[in-house]
Length: 166
Image (cartoon, rainbow, N blue to C red; front, top):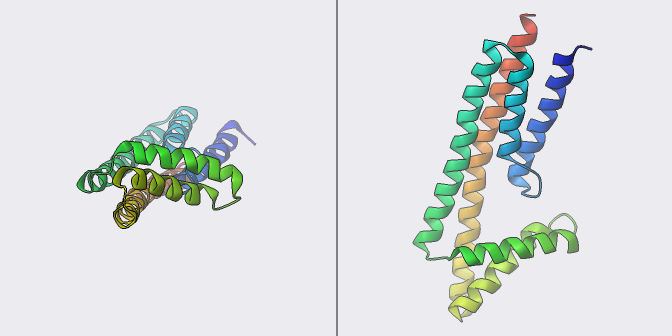
């Protein structure tokens, strides 16, 4: 096996982990995809590698920006402070270790709700804003996942073109 094949396999696995990491936030996500695309372009050292990197990085950057904008806009419309999200993230990490498989999601939701309950002092508005924050987070993740999948697909096409023309 030559080095290009080995690095292509390594980069493919890293891209798969990156795409999965968008849905499972404990794993690295878009940044890992970008680094994998860069590594593959450097290993190939050809114009094709750099074209695939350029297209892929546009998808990755677009996904990261769209996720931040969609989530941020929804949070701002509901006046949900960043503190609530941070508390949700902290409890999400705790939940990850306490409850196998679903602990991250459960911990995030509970932390977000508790923070909103402390801020709003009433149960119904706290539930409403927590659900809105969870929907916004999910929508942002979905947008980032879609664009990361396009970056992965672009890389896959590049791999096919490269190895069919060798």
